[in-house]
Amino acid sequence: MRGSKPRASREEHLPRPRSLAALRDEIDRIDDKLLALLNERAQVAVEVAELKAKSGGVVYRPEREKDIYRRLDKANRGPLDAESTRAIFREVIAACLSLEEPLRIACLGPLGTYSHRALRDQFGSRALPVPVDSIGAVFDEVEQRRAVYGVVPVENSIEGVVAASLDRFVDSALTIKAEILLRIDQCLMSKSGRADRVKRIVSHAQSLGQCRQWLARNLPGVPQAEVLSNARAAEIAREDPSAAAIAGRNAAERYNLKLIAANIQDHVSNYTRFFVVGRDPVAPPSGDDKTSLLVSVSHEAGALYRLLRPFADHGVSLCSIESRPLKGRPWEYLFFLDLFGHVDDANVTKALAAVQRRSLSVKVLGSYPAALAPA
Image 1 (spheres, rainbow, N blue to C red):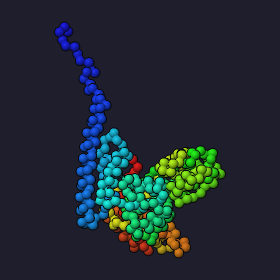
Image 2: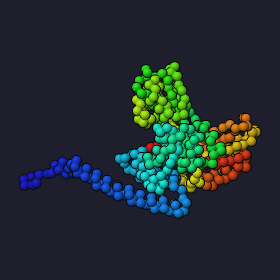
Image 3: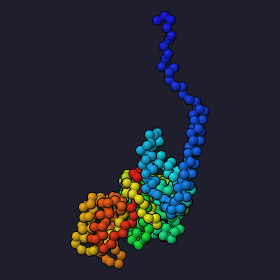
């Protein structure tokens, strides 16, 4: 129509993209806000520490941390995924916790083991790792108060239980504070990174077992040797060009080794479960807990059935049961049980009272928040 204004194009209504300089200015502004908020959170953590010191409260509260992660997972709208946000807040929590008390944590060493990685996943980079040469020594460090907590492996989804950890609970006064679930990606590594130069393979017994089929297919006839830890295997491979180690990718980085092959475990879903052990009393329920028990029964027909019956009667689900030989008494056994629930839950309390009447002894190893599934 004559005299009318030309119609604006669609492009004229679209917002103009901001320049790189403007975007960087926006990031700087947000970083300033984040820094102020982080220090505000840290100041609150200092006040929490002062209250705990006056009341004798426990510094490490895994049930509180789990509640934080669950709440953040639920509130997260992206684009950061759950794994990224957990990693960020793990370090925030660790930094604030270190203002209360720097935590010395014992683990199977040397540094670079899966136990060390589990420690970092649970306590962040601010924790002070205390690497020792055996699982028993982890318990010793905590019992002798040279470390506040310890991290020990208890079960692998392929190879089963770690007997050295379970057996130590028999005589130890330490209790379980938390559970860690770590995905295991086994790698074969050496100084050269060449499979044709490998004359022997070294690793922890559990790792060799997890890669048994892959090794038989790809390196048949190559001798295998067990060592105390995967990180120790990496140390050996660093010194011996003819040796290859099975360990985690972080061990290759720490000991300057080259990967021959990655993800060589026989099953894709390969996880190891760890316990955090300490001297603290049992924490309050988190709403999603497990309880671990050590039970002995008389050596007679039907004893195990009578032991387990109260859990079914009171609606308590068992997630695992393992038997271990009773030392000094051939063909008699102790039973390790993991159940869903907390010792303060009414149905668990009733079930344990009935179990106590039907067994020779019952030792509660701990009630603790069930591990969050890997993000």
